[in-house]
Image (tube, rainbow, N blue to C red; front, top):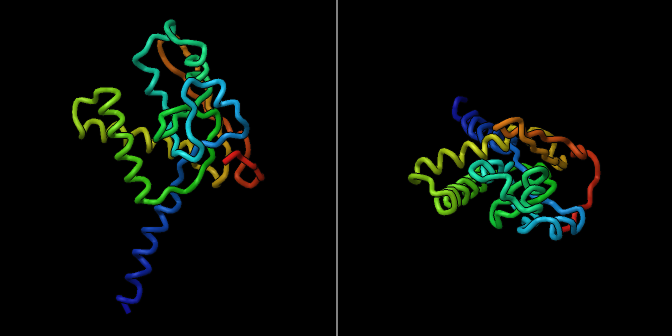
Length: 170
């Protein structure tokens, strides 16, 4: 009798992974390709990406960089920007691949001291993003950032619930 329940227990563990959500970049029109120096590719995994602005001087930003700071998510792959993201499920293999990609990016672009530190930072970024995506799959999200003194204030807002029909450009 005990052995008949064993497969069900392992299935339940996998179901928990299926409940983990992240977001992918979407384009509702072509504006991202016009307003961002590097637009994200449609369908890339997305992060808040606020870390990309931390060690730079806002006074040196171009208008397009200011707009990225104020309104854009970071697409993972192109490391370009997207105005909107849409929540979706992420599976364990996708999570691991995303973790590897972000770890490599933090090492190469931002000079993380070593692979372990880069991986910790990447995991933190991804896991923080999962907390922003605790909405039904298909929920459209936008991000807004401002400065409050020396601190960055980040707000997300729901543009459309997952139950509403959207027709993103793909």
